[in-house]
Image 1 (tube, rainbow, N blue to C red):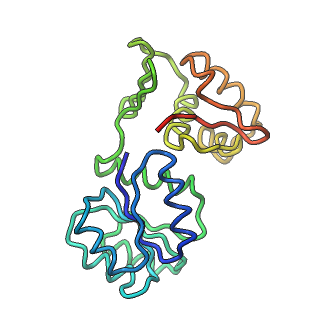
Image 2 (cartoon, rainbow, N blue to C red):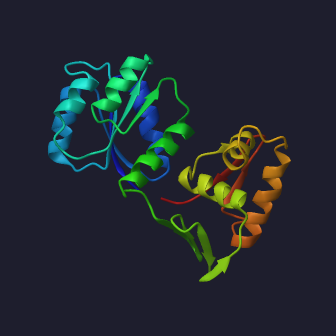
Length: 218
């Protein structure tokens, strides 16, 4: 996974982001003002920076202009005005996310940016199963396993958000879209099939009254 620098002066938000990203396997460092970003860059290489705009000492706009390294940057900010979003993207940010945001959306945006710059995982292996994200193919014991597109999307979502509980509603939206007319029992049926095909009966955990979690030891 990626090495990520979180530049956010609100300690509670910074800690929440760090904990959630570390759950899925990212390595994270936290700083709480703009100047500290440059101190951090002197001591470690990063694959991505999550950057607040309204920070002490240097704001996010000043930081993104001063960063010399070729590192993808995602703005995380309460500033929702169109002119701020346009300014941030024109200054070179790879994405612009407005607070409050959903952690699963943040995970997905991070994954999209990392894939764009070839810093994300191209495959995922667990026991005798290999998931190839590039080809959207899954192998078990080196044998290709057939999956419907929705099944692959469910597996991908569980892997990206591993060790985090995903609700049935969220999984339904990810795999079938917002306008799908079915109900959450569709998710249960597909998860049952995925468990059986991959031998993941003890890996995909049912979260009582919520949904499912792919449990992976770090």
